[in-house]
Length: 147
Image 1 (tube, rainbow, N blue to C red):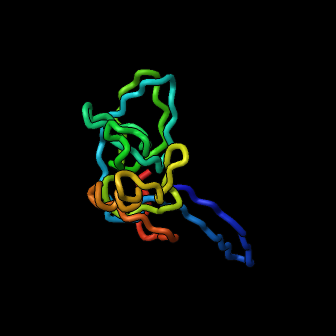
Image 2: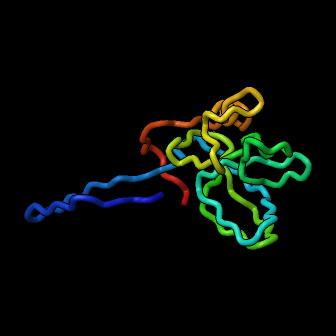
Image 3: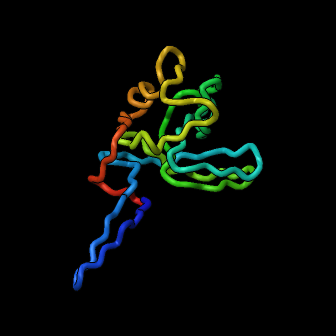
């Protein structure tokens, strides 16, 4: 979670601060760990990256709508920034259900929530193809992230 402190005001014996908190995982979330198989050099993935899963191996990859190996279907959303070494196989923490801030969702290349894969938009696939990720397009500050 990132916090920005703005406009500190001092009024005699009292100080007030305005906080802007950016929370991505808003509530009712379920998180899982799954292996990622890096096939390139050092790779950096960012929090919010939508991940797919290769059907034959079960490894996670960044979702690419043009893929045909299963990774074109959303499986979850990455919960933290991570740098992966060449040929590394780390376990990644992903959200597979719950409410997620739409503004924090990251797709690879030109893909967006409106990209259609096998007749369904990716936002519909996130809701139906996972355990139920609901993308929220507003600011919500009820439950803080676990980072």
